[in-house]
Length: 276
Image (cartoon, rainbow, N blue to C red):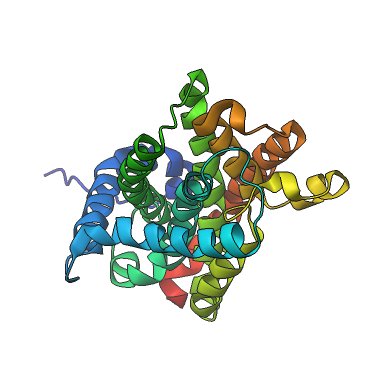
């Protein structure tokens, strides 16, 4: 009588070679994580999703008072509240995205330590969640523009391009922080400080045009400078002028952040299940 035996072959490196295909295969997990985070984000708060409007609105009021009323900085010929809020849109997205992505791996420790899936799905879904607040705040900006009678021109169609640069920069920074946060839990305390510091050194409460020309390129090493300038140019039209070296430098830095972030995250994610 012939015996039929079955062999189970474990091929080393198979998961590694199929990693990028697995990202597509696990796209439903990406949608699930993003939707879950959106649902629970304001679930246990008293006023719920209204926080997405209150936070940037209060920040705008503070900045208008400090930079517009006290410091009397120029506003590029537009109402100061709109100058500030058009910059708060990309900055709020970037800050929320890197904070959520930076803590995402640690927050999903139980799932990561028990189930296989490309870990890149976790911080990527966290970055996308920040777009919800962006869209909600965009409605408030539209209301402000109607109130002050500011009408955008054809440049508004370029807004998605600058948003894409912000997404790429946020993804890169978020991946770096997420990987470092697993290894060094101190980063959970560093992130809020960095975000708060970045808010004041970025041209949110003022126009970057006040920076002396010889320092503009150095100042643009902050990748959000070009993004914010691009948003103002797209929303306010001719009232805001672009400094193209800053835009190109921001694009280059965003791409560098994203590529290096993916490489570092991929290098470290093999240890996540053991360290986390």
